[in-house]
Length: 491
Image (cartoon, rainbow, N blue to C red; front, side, top):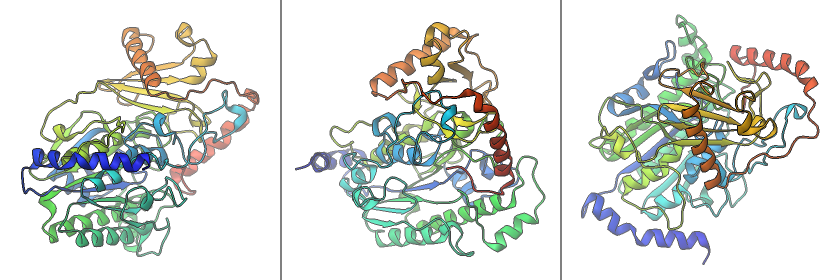
């Protein structure tokens, strides 16, 4: 018997007692629907403050549930974020750090050799789908997978009974396959309406290349621009995504399932430079707030307060334990979960037992971000901690090559921000609040050690800093093109 099968059987054996304890005898376990947008930024919905985009169905979801205002993705771009969601683990445990490679950009400007990237979630890693399946759930995955293309790494080998993996582009009446994905999810829900189900609905929208139905695009081309947002095609793609969400919610209503269904809506990472996330700094691919803070809503009638806003920091590594707790199930034996169930927050509790959340990216991503630290890269090797109101960035080039802790006064290895007072990360307090800096730095280093995080340690022998000037100008041009929307966005 292989390890995966042993863990599933061990997990399943403990299920009955847990279900009876949570729901009582004869109670039906709740359904779970996870709607995962692609590249939808923190400011890109009506309910989160956009002055141009419209999202009436998602706004209604927020009115009926809990809006998380300090929700995060576990990574700055999509593949590692999805790996964290599906595995319930931070990036050091599964090694998926980026899309494709961790050495993306001009290698002559990389001071260190990055840690290699894994492009697949290992088959030995027991997924949330397998855990929910062992808990008696029908499992379905519809849309973007992005965690492997081999027979052993596709979703049907990772615990999903039903899958649909359409491409990214389609005809004008089905932009980004929004409606194909939604129809498949609705069919799955209807087929399994008499048993508990877990539906993972992972849209390609609003990732580039942007698409919208002709009528939707015309609606926003005729609309008066907002002060912050004005890009009609971006608005149209968001609006059509919202329409797909509405169709899914209507199906739950039609089947009489809404009251017993936990619906969670969020995004895989921060928005792209095409859509300003101010006051947040940066955009997709970086580890400033604009790259990792995302919209998140949970609706669960009778279990989640209606119309509540929650500012407790949460991330998509929390979904695995949250869904298991909702199902009345325990994690698989031997499975390390890095998140915590957010169910207490749905009732108004304002804190969890953990003290901090973490990020680790040991490589390079090309193309600068708005108000970024770097004129060439979205990010260089970095680890990050958020603890309470405070957030600390540890940059490994300066830490390893420029004197580490002994030279913090001058080497710029650490940045520290108070997010309550400075959500835009404009005021680095690393040299003024050394007590808080050292506290968070110690916590972060202890976490890196505990998770056995692989850290860049070798100098890049091909580093040629004199080439930076000629690299900077093209990146600035590319950033402007991304904002105007004339070219495809960053992966």
